[in-house]
Each structure stands twice: as structure tokens, then as C-alpha cells.
Image 1 (cartoon, one colour):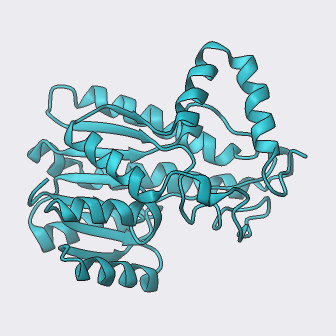
Image 2 (cartoon, helix red, strand yellow):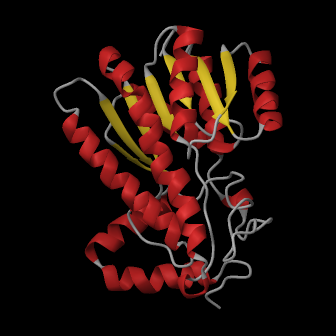
Length: 268
């Protein structure tokens, strides 16, 4: 990854920021995007202090024009694009029967359409350089999670899109990675949307018991270098995918029971 140009959406915190650090320390030139300029500037300053070549750009992935500007900015700064990591994402928590459907639309606009817009903008350069497109999916893209209808639907859609893209790029030398972390320490649950679209505020899970964002990022870096097609992380995540594939009825009960144990779970 020495001197490769890497774009990371949603790069100001969590897995995105950790990815910027691990790729940057390996010699890549980084452009991170985010919607909050203060958070973005803080991340860029911190990583520059560690000797990483990095720039930040305020960008809303749910807006097609912002993604076009992102690709143009990367070319202006670094002259090429080698890797696009579609990391920007948002989640939600509410039972579908109680949910304002605008919440699902917002989640889909960021988690799914945001990936389409960013990939479309960067694809010509990545084809030219025989680079990589990474989609940060989730175990929820293989096994639907109760009270996460919008999030799970967006990740299932993402997995389908990446599968199509991988097949279309089969003889063009472009690498497509579907990376599916299990529960990983990040701010995503604190920013989760509730049934009416307000922010949840506090994580309902024990963040300290999860895989760290740094460990997750290192796994994704290694999978990108090895040009793997799939990465499923954590023992719990791999087990959930396996059980759901072979014993779906059992998976329904196990997943329900596990999610019902969350603090203030709507399943209770």
C-alpha cells in the first residue's frame, strides 16, 4: 500500500479513523470524509501528527454531487485513486411496527445509496489502477437483527451490490472486498436513530467487551492487501452466519434472545 491513494468515507472516528491510521502508517496517502468539520479536522490533525499523509473533506455520502467532488478532490490532491473504503454508515433501533419509515429511508440513503454514489464516482480511476473497493458491511447483512430493520436491510442490499460488482469486475482486475465486522467499539450505536428519528445517545451494549476499532481496521487492511473477497469478523459473528445458514429457525430464537438482553431493548 506504499504510495497508494486511499479514500475512506466516514473517516473521522471509529473504524474509519482506525483504517486511516493503519493504511497511512503503511505509506498510503489518505483522504477521509465526514459531515462534521470539527470532528474531521481533529482526526486529520491527530493523524498528521503521527506522520501520516492525510487530508479531510466535508462530504455527505448521501448526496451524489458530494461524492463526485470527493473523487475530484482526491485527484487534485494526489493525482490518482487506488482504494475506496465505503465506511460511512448509520444505524437505528426500533421495532418496525413502531418505526417512522423516514428513518429507514435515511439509513438507506447513507448506508446503501452512499456506497453507490461513492463507488460510481471513483470506479473509472480504480479500474484504471486495478485497485480495490471495500464495503464495510456487517453481520447484519447476513442475518437480520430485530429492531434493526433499516440497518439490516441496508447491509443486505450492500452485500448484493458488492456481489454484482465483484462479478462485473472479474476480468478487469478490480478487487472487491465485503468486510463484515461483528459488534465493534465505535460511536455508531450512540448516534443510532430511534423510532422517530431522534438520536439514541447512549450505546445499549457493553462497548468495552467488543473488538476494538483498531483491531478491526488491521483485519480489513490485511484482507485488502491479500485481495480477499470476504471478511467476517469475531467468533460471535462467524457463528451467527453459520447457524443462520444451516439452522435458520434456531437462529431466530438465539438472535431474538441475544438482542432482547440489550439495555432498554424494545423486544422486552
